[in-house]
Image 1 (tube, helix red, strand yellow):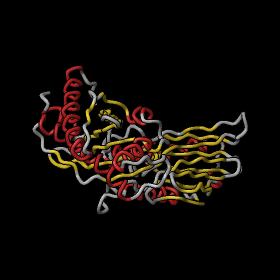
Image 2 (cartoon, rainbow over the protein chains, first blue to last red):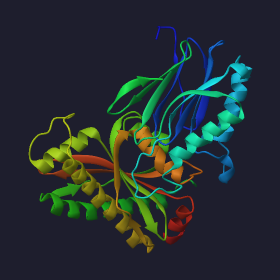
Image 3 (cartoon, rainbow over the protein chains, first blue to last red):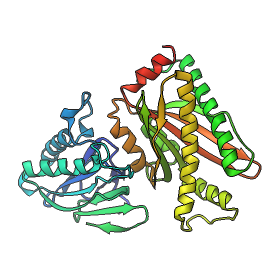
Length: 164
Length: 200
C-alpha cells in the first residue's frame, strides 16, 4: 500500500464501495460472509459483510446490510452509481464458516453455509460470475481486496495467508 | 433492549457476584488451590464495544460457549484471551508453558472445563434468582478471532439490538491470576421473561 492510498474498513452488517488505489477490508468473518463485487475496468469494487441469508425471515430488518438479499441489492445499486457496469461485474467470496462444533447440524449451526448459498443465488439471479471463493470450514477469516489487481487476500488464525 | 435503570443493574451485579462465588468454590476444588474472585464488573454493552474491550475483532481468544436450555433460551459464552489460556494451562500442569507452544487435546479440554464450571455456576445463580429453569448444554470451544467467534451467538438469536450482558471477572489465587469475561446473550424472546421474573 502506498502512503496516500487508504484501506476502507467495513464493519459487521455493513457494506462500502471504493475505487483503486484504495483497498477494502473486513475483519473477523465467522459464519458471516464477505462478498466482493468488482468491475475490473473501472476498478470500482464493493464489499458486503452480511450476517444472515434472508431478510424476509426476520421480523426486524431495519439494517439492510445485515442480510445477504437486501445488502446485495443496496451494494449493487451503489456500485452502478459509482462507475461499475453490470455486464463487467465479477465476484469473490469468503467466510461462511461453522465456528462451533455443536453436535448435529441444525438450521442454526449451518447459518454459514446458508449465507454462502444465499450469495450464490443472488449472483446467479443478477448474472454475475463468481471467480473464486474460500468458504466454509471452521475458522474465522480477515479479508482485504485490492481493486488494482482484483486480488482477495485471506488471513486466518493458524492457516497460511492465501490470495484468490 | 430498553435502557437499564440503576435497580436493574444492581440486580445484575448481584447475580454476577453470586455466580462468581459459586464458580470460585467449584474452581478451588478442581484446581486444588485457594482462589478468590473480585467483585465482578457487570454491564450491558453493544457487541462491537465488547469486541473492542477484549482487544478488537482480530484479537485471538478462546471462546467457550453453551446453549441455554430450559424456560429461557440463548447463549452463555466465556471469553479469555490467549495469554490467559497459556497461564491457565501452565498453572494446571505446574510447568511454565511458553505462549505459542502447541496445546494438547488435554490442555484444551482442561480450559474448556474451567469455562464449563464458570458458565454453570453463573447460570445456576440466575436460575436461583429468577426461579426460571435454565441449564447449559455441553460447551463447545473455539480459539480464533474474537469477531468471528462473537458474531455467532448474536446471529443465531436474531437479535434486534446487538447488546450483550457482560460480566468481567478476575480470579485470584496465591500464585495465579486469571481474568475472563462471561457474556450472556439471551434470545430476544427470553429477555422480557427474565426481566419479569426479576420483578419488573
